[in-house]
Length: 317
Image 1 (cartoon, one colour):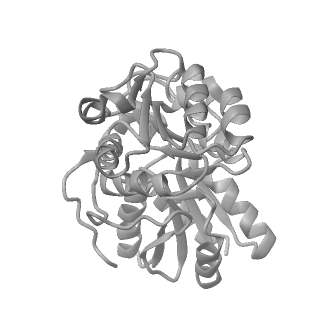
Image 2 (image 1 turned 90 degrees about the vertical axis):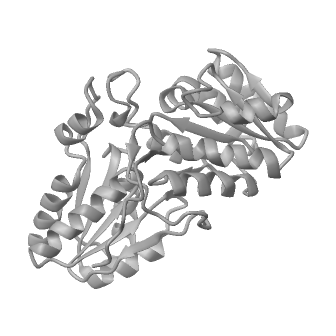
């Protein structure tokens, strides 16, 4: 299989910050709003370089969404920044009514998603945000896998007209996708071709899927790995083409298996080509305090869990 090289661990939130900094220089319509978490969202450079286009809203996330919706009326492209928990659950009514229903051109940028937020614990580790956001009509949902892809996604959504939810994380993870890549919304990326099992993964689980594929290869199992960075709209064609060859699939995500990528894939399969599927996701539970690695292991969100799921689904073919 193709070997992917970690060029040096970086946090995906810094990829967002780098993309936002670049947009500040190239797109005068981009404005940024933050709910008292400038450092955590890596929005410092944008604020420093473009203070007239930066709005510190404070701990008032619902107000931030309303302001962002209003700014679009004057042709601005607002990027809101706070933790994923506060970007979705806390402000769902404002997003639904003021942004999604009105088809406002707001980019909801959410850091510290999933259990890899770590020591802050269950109250901050949102594992249902993908489900919340993908159910909103017209909302694009993007969950990139590393620093480079997060930066590319940040740049790409500025050119897309309509509401977007961009999800990224806190910890430093493998940075293995190309630098200065072109990001295409809704287009999955084939990372490794295989014949025995399809593994589709999103976010932090993409690197884990690649590590799992290496382990499976050592066991004589050929795994096809696909990076689903856009959960909505889902690249159904890529998924169906792959399972037509492999006959089974594993979905991997740092999210509850209710409402996430796995359910979207299952719907696609049952409508087109039902094949066995296994889910690598949290099992209808909240998180807890711990290091990211400890939590990923406890909740079965790592390469070892993907290997076991691939072995199990292969036996079901």
